[in-house]
Length: 342
Ligand code: TYM
Image 1 (spheres, rainbow, N blue to C red):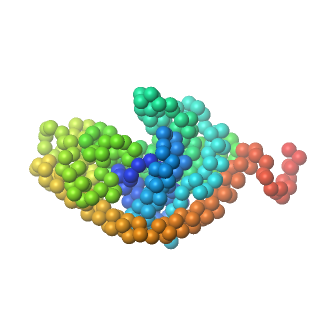
Image 2: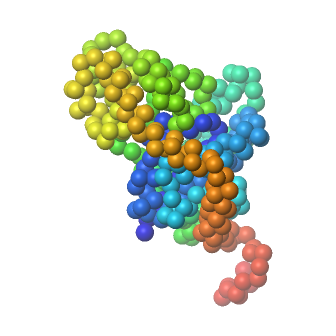
Image 3: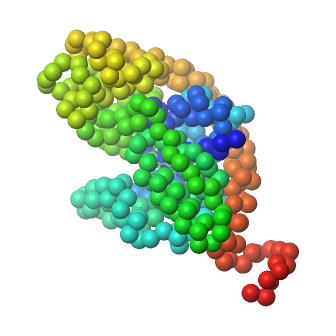
């Protein structure tokens, strides 16, 4: 059975981009068709300036929301990264396989470190080494497929490169993973700035639809989305990014095709109205279930405890094998190997 792994970083409230780009597929497809693990990757939230209490709060909230989107702990494993030591154990080993140059080439590192420097802040070393930890998240589980939005594709590519390099140098240890991106809405853009990604860590509230936004707020944000002056409703990402973004969101919510949908609209207003209603309808069941789950935090905690136990048992053998392959002496005496004198 295909092994699927994906994760979400508790650095802000979950957005429509997170949902359409990744999470919806986890709940609707992956958990049924594969042996899937979904992780709240809290260690990654420490790579930028952070408030400890907020990270804790968002970790709980993300776990609750993931379950609210339909993830069923009987079908998949839901857990928190820091509850399973294997991620950090393997991350260090992969730092010893990666190069400084390939880490510095990562687009997210370049963008985030530049932003931090502009603000006069300092860049944490973990922001640079982040992709090694992400590779560890993936490789520890023998992952075949990583369902993510477009912005994470480069990091998954790096995980592939590290797996191949490790296997060539130290013997076959890791499965080489591949990216799985959605057909539409792989990069949902900010409604106010349609050339930038809708990111949960950004401050621009009016351009971001959050999963827990009230229906009226969703409608307002979408009706006020920036549109392009020009040629009517045309699906053209380069020339009409605002309209293309709305068409992608509508297509993702209704199962349609953005190009075909563009032919159905004469005016921007009508497109916005239908997009807003489609988003409200997609979010409604998630919000209803979230409200229910909030009344039972003990259930969410039990899911996470059980998930961590299962994840630990899955990751341990692979990480132990990687430690042995790279030359680290096992802590517990093993059966003597034929060439034990070496
Ligand atoms: P994160 O937390 O930024 O995002 C979680 C998932 O949501 C997708 N996504 C989007 N998709 C479409 N449009 C958008 N505007 C949008 N914004 C976010 C992301 O592509 C991602 O799939 N480094 C990762 C978390 C991570 C991870 C992993 C993922 C850590 N280890 C191992 C997969 C496997 C991140 O920061 O995602």
